[in-house]
Length: 479
Image 1 (cartoon, rainbow, N blue to C red):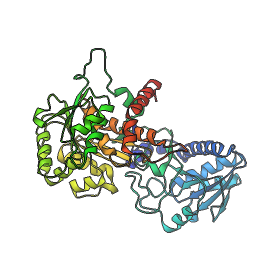
Image 2 (cartoon, rainbow, N blue to C red):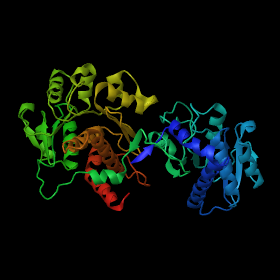
Image 3 (cartoon, rainbow, N blue to C red):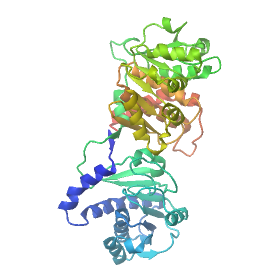
Image 4 (cartoon, helix red, strand yellow):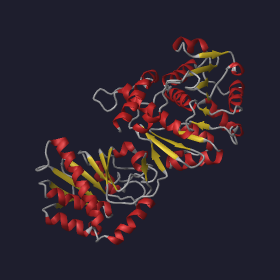
């Protein structure tokens, strides 16, 4: 797993090293790694290092010192380095002296460099950029390399409340922090520099693609359709038949052994997925090992009755879409349920469930709802947060927004429902499904290429099997 450590955890891990090592050792380690990343970035973008130019945006904290020391190292490699000091009287003295001793200069403007280093605010900073810093950042036209984190973004929550830096690359020191996964769109590519920290177990983690691929259930020599997992899907209505088609399709594509459908649009579902087994009603659905309920069922009395029936079972249940609206009106339907339960809200649905907008701290709010209701919660977003009632939190950074399209959540519910039916733990199944779903969206859109384009949920669904194959291949490659 990739772990993400809080500011307090990182500070505690730094303390014994700062006490034991000569003054400035950790900073110079960080600066050496930073300079190496910047040099590689210059080479990649411009074809060389010597003769190129870099501007440092230097605040009063340690990140400013890191930038200054890195600037001194880059000067020795023939890079023209200019430092813009936001608070000259509080700039890191030793770092500034090192830069000047190598021929670096101080200026009041960014100029026209090949790269800019953001050393404005460190991990102890809070809140958005102040006006002077915001104006300076707004004048930048070159790609930005952030020192440890993009200035203005909260290091523990990834929250953005005003002007911030958007980096092409972020160079993290010692440990990945929550900001690096919760605000991936601000961080760009993240490079981790080892500075020798001895870190505790983290409270936030992400499954690697190889771990997802390794755990993905595949049929063995003695498996049959029942042993591979049977998922029941309660979805769709006359007004929203597509929700049922997409949800069942997600379950089929995720290699479920069997998908059983309960709902009024069986003909549309079977027209797309003839392998699905349709039932006349919930009571006649047959053997099921997990349920998905909610996409497109409506929120009237019939919809509420379906939600109540599904939650009355002793099987794992994924609750999505209209079923979440039903729960918001009657939380007692799910609270105290002994079987595993997964709620999959987007931010608006989360606010209906709790009365709280989760934007300021998505991890804390998701963890709190999971603990209070005794369920697992998957809060959708570019960084999808999954919290279990035991406090374990996993996160999946989609690395893009291709999945932000109507019907995408219906596909996700089907994928995760299929995984739940195989007996995987709820938090693990949710994280695995989110990873495959976001990869399928990226494959469908061409995200990261020059021909990237918006997609539909149908296009996303068409790439789910391909995403699983890619994840399995990464297991073989050890990625």
